[in-house]
Image (cartoon, rainbow, N blue to C red; front, side):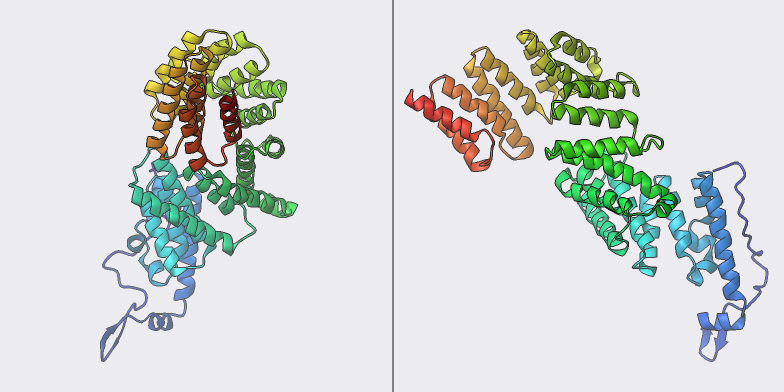
Length: 458
């Protein structure tokens, strides 16, 4: 709370007589009659509306200075602090503003309570549905970042409510940007479903592009989310292999965000480098990553150096690739860094060191251990240790089954390869059968079947 919060509106002393009667009497006792109150004082409606505007004006001033706690201290709970506004049904706008302040203070459940009240009063309000959706999204992101804890059932319920209110807001104002962008984020970041997210980001971008220059000038928040939608649309497009489309969106995002800086520069140029790398435009990818690295601390930007290592490997600069990735401190070497470091060592012929790094990574990693095991299987094949190839491939598949409940076709690929190298065609066919049952569209299935057929003839 600020040093001198001031509430402009004052109340009469507790023993002061009201200026107008709040109740009327009849033979049936005391009747709380809104119409009677209004009839008894012709100025009461105007007075309460003016009071509402004064309260909202004061809140607006506090919002400008981000005095969220002052807003809560002065006006919450609403029924206690502003009973007359509640009585005359003039409290919904006030509750929306208080809900926003509560959310800014991290008191999301209290914010949701206020907004649920507003929803009862205004069930078709775009602003209420948007605010509810935002607070559900905010609570889910807080849980994802381990700032709060949500039980699985509570998380599932909040995801459903986030979608419900986002879609209602979209239907009420289908030409807006923010709610399409936010539902895209729910799918992409919280449900790991970029396929469902992509059309929502595309709709957000399309809506902004449909605005006239005059409308754009009045919607700064919409522009911010348009820029972010472009960034995420590029990411989703890249994930679907639509590299040239991703590049177009990313370059547009960089152009549009040059002065505003809504998306961090290191993220934009890293994404550009990643897209160019996927397109095998290695020299341009290198330039983009060098640019990205100038905006961030080397330790925090370890992901940039990791990708730079892969780019340099592609350019044939093996020593430089190794030096770049090896410069990442041990404490910052997440599994994906270890994989690229092992690739660099493998390219230099330093296979024992590569294996050591991968074994250590596999021992520590509880989420993507199968990828380290897969690289170990490849190295074992290079060393003609086919029993190890089968062992690592089998372990990778088993880990994937236990962790994600699905087979790991890439792991079984190397199991098949190991058995073929040992001349055990029956076991190789068993591996292919597993892939055909569970992953019939596995891209290398045809190659495996051709290899088995060739081994049988030979």
